[in-house]
Amino acid sequence: MAFRDKAGCEERVPISLTLYLIETRGRKILVDAGCDTMPGYDVKHHISPATALRRYGVSPLEITDLVLTHAHNDHAGAAHYFKKATVHIARGELERAIKKGYLTDALNVSPFDTAREIAGVTVKVWGGHSEASSIVTFLHNGREYVIAGDECYQRECLTEKRPTGSSFNKEKSLAFVETFSSDAYTVLMSHDPAILPGQNGYLKII
Image (tube, rainbow, N blue to C red):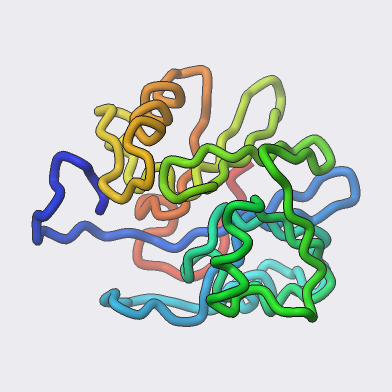
């Protein structure tokens, strides 16, 4: 799943489960909700996203906007914690999210078609990993940051331009690594094991 050129390989690579909190213009924007369980994975360290936020000093009820990059369990399964947030999800991912039970009537869901701006943060459908999987971009001190969702799993996807093997659209997965491997971008990944290796908690990146 991590690398297209390793499709079918039984070798395992470590991954993390990382969410990103953007605090800007009086908003607390959480990119992805995480999950409480990871069926099918050998989980060594895990805490709920709500616990990680509380350790940082933020209540889940303080989150104003929840961006779901796509409707897979590890990104959307814990959306229920963020009851006061507006949930932004691409329309192409909405049906799966509802069917899987990630989105309920108790949540304020606001689907979008191709892109949405939230207080200077842009959510844009890329569609490499799943039908309407999204990325998140924003500028900080003149630098463009890209939250990749699952458009790539490992740093090597970018440094070696090796697309992920878990692709809905292989051409768009290749386009992602070719575009964002440029030094013009800082790419933040959802499964990069180098951010908090072997730890649970939070880290201020910017």
